[in-house]
Amino acid sequence: MTAYVPAITETDLKKVILSLQQVAAGRSNATGTVTLTINVATTTVTPTQTGSIAAGSTPILTPTTANAATEVGNGTMYVSAVANGSFTITHANAATTGRTFLYAILG
Image 1 (spheres, one colour):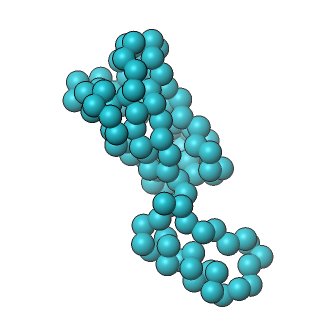
Image 2 (cartoon, one colour; image 1 turned 45 degrees about the vertical axis):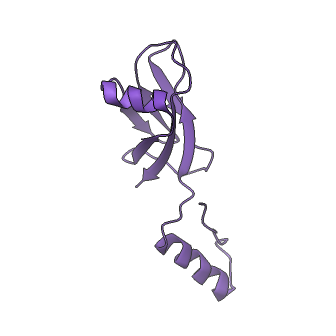
């Protein structure tokens, strides 16, 4: 779930408190879905939330399909690069479709 983000100029204390409560409850805007690209060995993910990933961040992937779980089980995928604005997943160069993951970004 996404969290409410008050503007830097927000003066309504209730809105600021709501934002803090949502973060404390585990909500984050640094999440998304990615499906591995077929017939290539890498997939680059560019999160839609600006500023949600930077060098030094940690993307965490969770498989949501049987094909994604198989990819993890085969040991053929890993996060190979993290940069400002994107991260790269290296994986099997296969024609397998539906290798879909949820991701969350820490840091």
